[in-house]
Image (cartoon, rainbow, N blue to C red; front, side):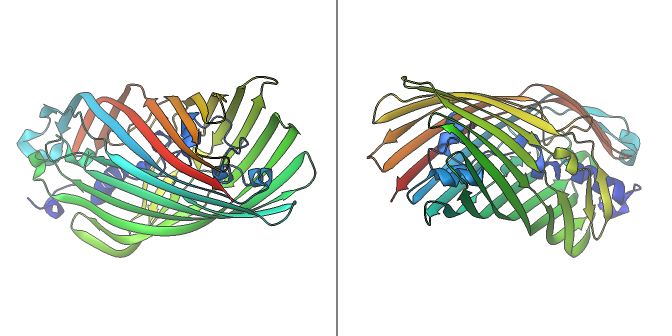
Amino acid sequence: MQIQNLPFSKKALLAGAFSITACQVSAAGFQLNAQSATGLGRAFAGDAVIADNASVMSRNAAGMALFDRTAMSFGLNVLKTDISVSDASYTLGAIAGPANGLSKDSNYSDAGGTSYAPNFFLIVPLNEKVAVGVDLYTNFGTRTDFSETFEGGEYGGLTDIKSLNLGLTASYRINQEWSVGGGLDIIYGTGELERSLSDNLGGSEILNADVAGTAVGFNLGTVFELNENNRFGLSYHYSPELEAQGDVTVSGVTAKNDSLYLGLPDMIEFSGYHRIENTQYAIHYSVQWIGWSSFDTLESDAFGEISEYHWKDAFHFALGGTYYLNDTWTLRGGYLFDQSAQDDVTSISVPDSDRHWLSAGFTYHLSEKSNFDFGLTYLLGRDVEVSEEITNVSSITGTTRADATLVAVQYSHEF
């Protein structure tokens, strides 16, 4: 059976296929916080101001002013997602002819995948007032893969999204209390998307996209130091619309060098850090606003407006603690509550929900200037009931669940 001969709208099929793939690029459920092992170990609580290594520049460029020596950090974050679909029912549509209305179980237990996110940070103080830096890290790095055994291939398939952020930043110390900073973010993103009809409808490929693009954003931040044990940070990241180009094949029709336009979210973060006087303990916290409502439509030069979304802005709230055990060991932990970006529009392939982060980590000080960090987070999602339909093709209902484990290691050195 060839899909181009089927009696239904290709654009409707395209909309259905992309509605479960484009979300993967910017869904809150897979926003990858992968800037550092220290941040991961405290659920990123206080990360816009703690400045215990050079990775602070990714959250707040003004934090570079807290360094009086050249500082370098690099590491690797590993994300393993556990995605399942339960109580699922897949129903054929009108194009199935006599099989119209036939329903089949569509449960799936292993749609997750493993992603790797390296990072690198360098801060160079030029004098007592000015510091400059460069960083390289990823904002998104998720892979989901439903095998051919999944009933309802048009709602599953492969989604493999990666991004890389190159930052060029500078900070300026105004006085003993106030510092400011900012910089440019050069974002490079790639996406590989594949969808096919289920075997019940012929198994034909309905989508194959391999796209990549670059965009430029910026960030601004400030730090206020009440004293050496108490400080606050505030930062803003402007995220541009990303134009990703490449070959897109839909229903047997290929658009060469097509462009897909994705609205990425702006972010505002406030953090605080407080070392309890005459103790070995510190508490820290963060509140981050993420402007997911900027992702309202997905558009293509070749196919026009493909799909509409009902995304909502969201917050995450993080609280953490640090225990400075001795000169060799520092222990940390944290909790983060992350609000879902999806509202009325949900997805089988990209399940999203409110999430709870449970985090722990440590620093092992190799010397006064060098240390090794480890961070571990278990991310708990919740069950979400999902219902999707591609007009005249099929529909699917079910309960999705997405949990994840994140592990990170990092080495830091001051010169």
